[in-house]
Image (cartoon, rainbow, N blue to C red; front, side, top):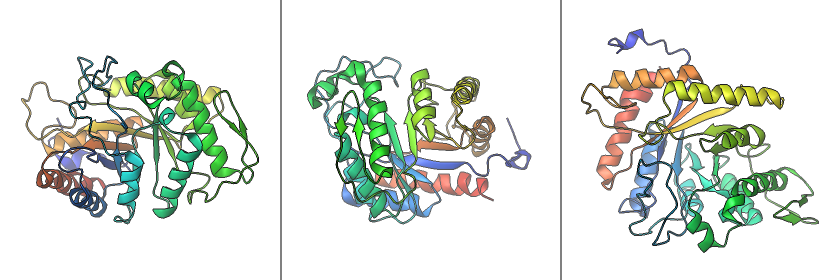
Length: 329
């Protein structure tokens, strides 16, 4: 363990950016608490805030959730979830600087033209603060209730819809002919403020997701530091080698891609033996951040959510004071 913070060579880490999860269900997912949480992050140096995506939660779920050891979905008790894009629209009007990230938006759930318009509107109304986190989804039952395109084609659908978004956002005379959706002879305004379009972070741990990030995205957006998906430095190093090799094979410059990793923020308690990443003392957390930064990670998004508003704000304040302030010196 590094015992002296002065020993940390922060040259490669000083540009690391941080984000946090927003609540989208429970007592803190109401206008007042949401505003306080978002504004606390806005004022305390966080780069972005993210919110997940569930529109409807079936009572019976057999699909395997990829981020728990037993495959059980932990958020299905009540089925309560705020719609993510509406939530971000609300927060865009009461924050000034912080980036707004649907993370991830399940692309096949929504009509692509309507979705492109909603996202373009959010980017406009927020003065260019949208980052689009996208994923293919995992809950087949939700696909069926939503009458979305076939679950087993969700990867192809996602690729096609991302191409549609880009066509609508960048072309003066948008037209598209695809396997799942086609259009021509239309107008699409307003365009997003960000040019050529808001950054796209592609979620997922699979090789297909990494290729999608290279082909259609501006960043890769994996989940790590949890038992079901630890994404240890050695693993992310291997995955990034795959990303770079694939990018080179398709003549894509990978050097400007964001690597935005989602991870929980554990408290300072640790047994000293099996310490999880981003837990323990301040120096331990800084060392973990430094180690991931050396590998090329550009953003880390922590889960600071609690059912208690005061506790959530205290976590945000602690992280800003103890971590962000030292990283940005």
